Image (cartoon, rainbow, N blue to C red; front, side, top):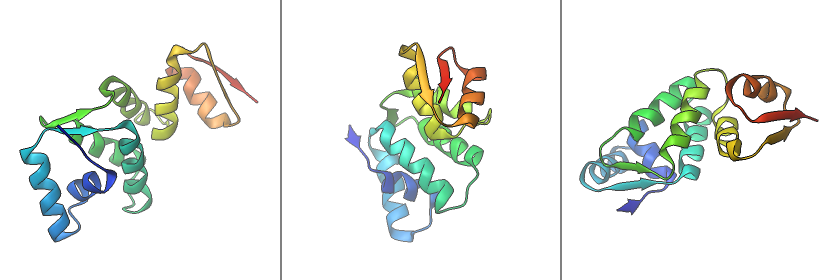
Length: 129
């Protein structure tokens, strides 16, 4: 199994660089691939900030990539939950943080928008400062 970096995932999804995109696709099509949660986080950010995708579009792209037979995610249930929460109005990074915090009784934040959405989506207590 090969771990891949953000730039490989981005080239695979964006198909914007003839040589690198072809190499990324060939790699993913021929090898078993491991994707760290941090790579997903950075990929989502790149898709939004560089390529102009909406949060929902970026989440759908990640979901499609994660669904490939050759792709294994570091924490697939966590990623699936975060992707689902994006469709319900939460940003991907916040959704990952919240899903990871489900082992805790309380999460504290200054972000009131995050807190409002998090209270609806998770059993984690949310405390706003």
